[in-house]
Image 1 (cartoon, rainbow, N blue to C red):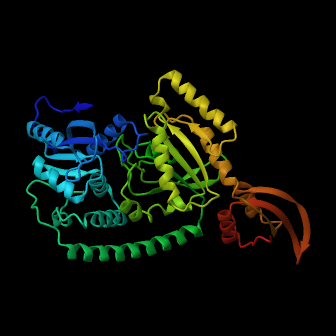
Image 2 (image 1 turned 90 degrees about the vertical axis):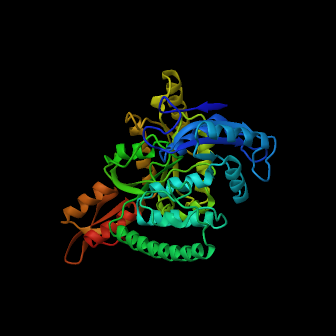
Image 3 (image 1 turned 180 degrees about the horizontal axis):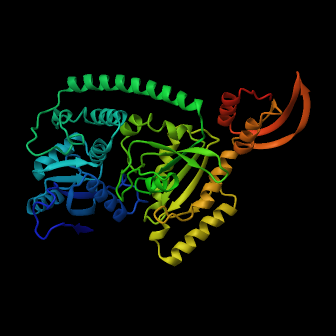
Length: 452
């Protein structure tokens, strides 16, 4: 398959001044996952390139008979790509695979243009998108770890004002080989800074526990619609675009559930297949909210060609995060609004059948864009959080109407008929089911302690 794309009538510089790029997805026997649809993978690679405003003028996928150690690609293909890059004035070739440092360097010499692989492109996107101090530190640590053996880029990215990490570089940027000692020193400093950030996050978490709410985290493949759903449910304005990795830094907001209880909804970075190992490790601190959540809502682009493959990729990452075994996971099948009416109806029916059966994970067909299908999902989240409630007795003053009202509003009062004398007045012994976090809030606010 070959696809040519252009934004203007002539090949050459685009009207926006974006760098001209070509995307190549090589199917490698024994390496490329057979379950992945090549067209979907190529489209994803194009989306990654466009996520940092590259002008993709050519894209294709090719099937290799066997990988060539020196360049990964065969000699005939390299020769053809050289002609294509020259004819279309391609400044950057993105190879949607993993290249060794030698392969990358040999391809650059043969093609006479800059070459980066999938890992380099993803790291560049993360570098351009990270907004928080912690996010920038994590991305830079992952990038330096990745580039430690690739002394082929300049050190000047540390002084550049634009986003990104310098894998692609900029006009006039010098090609000075990285000094390994400087990299190692920088890595040590970054790790120390991240340790301090982690301690600060721990203090913030303890502060939140003083006014605690249960946490519900949205997870899913990149561009599945998590941020759009987050905005709908919390009436927020988190950046939500039809773009890969639109969200990198976690965002948390309060959401009121059907029962009236409050929970914290967390929007997280999207996952992707073949995510660099170093990047997963660097972002583990950011994903702490996922590990501490009581409910995970796996938002899926159910209309995507490779939706089942994307699901498996997400589950693989979740499996590496040491999620508590009692965490409730449910699926939100998003983007049903993009389906034909008959397929949408069948998808909604299939989700309902899964919920009525004995599947481990319930499914809910929704459209975050339309704002439809939310009610069953929110009810299910509410019910899932109720499973974590702890039943206990508490003795309060019979005249403390505020405490009684709070318990009725935030928990399930199972028995409030037992009156007995306590000291110099009458107290009421209540049997109440509350979230562990709500028990803490109740005790801190009113001074009563649960008896059992």
